[in-house]
Amino acid sequence: MQAGKVYLSTAYFGNIQYFSKFAAAEKVYIEQYGNYTKQSFRNRCEILTASGRLSLVVPVERSTGNKIAIRDVRISYAQHWQKQHWRAFETAYNSSPFFEYYCSDLKPFFEHKEKFLFDFNTKLTIRILELLNISAQISFTDKYEVFGSDFIFDYRDSISPKARQAKEDRTFAPQKYYQVFEQKFGFTPNLSIIDLLFNEGTNAKDELIKCVK
Image (cartoon, rainbow, N blue to C red):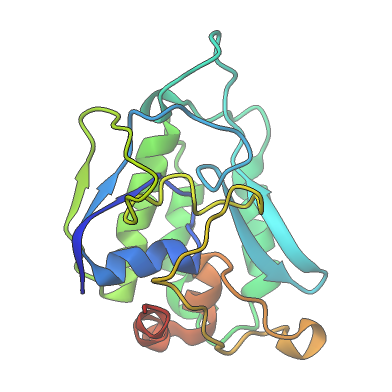
């Protein structure tokens, strides 16, 4: 168990590194007042398909100003992204051992139109934690705080799809598990949590804990 408070950004189907924090920390704070930034896991996830790694992005409405708090970001439904994302999940994981076992738990999130990205991500994250059987103590920030560079439990920006922004995480070590397309691409680490969930199912929590150092 990691002592102290862990700070995370909101995330759309966060990756394995992201969810390992819930499995290891005493208490997790999810940031809701930090500024929304593009090209982050706040509105995207990465899965593995027959064609390789695929990034799925939740479109958001453009803001009138330069800065907007993540809690105020609205999801855009100008495109049929919900159908596109669910179709991508089906195509990638319909042959995985646990897709049918969990699909009814997750599909409703792609049938209801949530207004705000933060609310959508929060409800989705809580559902994933329930499916993983992880009882995490979650709170939400009531203001934005800046921590020193040596604050090792601040992962709000360091868990990132941008290689130049992602920082070394000494509390996380990716572990190999079964993947549908492993024979084609080799093992692909640190994908979205749904890759672990659909492939390992009831063993997913144990596999997640193995990643915690």
